[in-house]
Length: 137
Image (cartoon, rainbow, N blue to C red; front, top):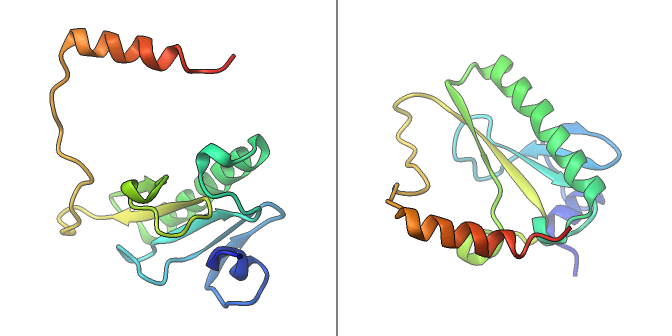
């Protein structure tokens, strides 16, 4: 079954498009976190970053950068959150790879995504070793 984003790509559902090329589409989020909140999607349907092919990773990153620059110029926010969630535990609700570009202004009331913690040096070294062992060549 096609995701809502695939249906947008196919023209079955309207969207407020801000940019489109052969591989990606950027449009306004219908439930925006802030003024100018844009979603950037790859046109190929992949559930998340882990399933994306290399060409779509590059294309989506390129479009995200292009649209983020436009948002900075057009809206002049103080910053932009670039958010990409993988899996329901991370807050993903549409299982089609997408990036949120969320313009931010000082004192806009938007909460941060996490509370900073502490990492012990010995735990850091264990994590580094564990992660490195699982990075493919």
